[in-house]
Length: 171
Image (cartoon, rainbow, N blue to C red; front, side, top):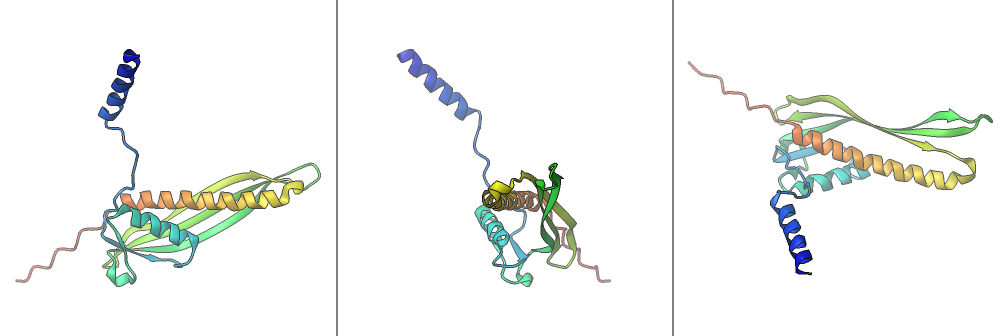
């Protein structure tokens, strides 16, 4: 019995000594950001929640108050037919979400050029389960949106503000 407790205590000690810890939110390299997006969209709410969880970055109410501006070029959802069965009815759909954005600094200089995040999911379809498949699509779109927010946060944390221009020397 003592031997088992000793092995358990030793294994706990080894796990804590290796430096293992859960990945937390990554701090963003800027103090404030303005989101040029619809304030009431689910994507905006989820993104604001993630930014606030970093604890280091403030979400500005006006573009003039922010170090960085996130401008959205596109945010589209698509549903395409992937395959048909022998009767000519839909057997599979492909769900796509595309999000295009660019990052602008306070001085108007482009920090990150127009970039796009594209996420796809394939879903089978059956006419007899139409209501369940519709609900499944909604769940998949929500999952895709969460994935989009995580990818966007990684890109924001990797962005670097350009250095301030040096003042011109006066003769």
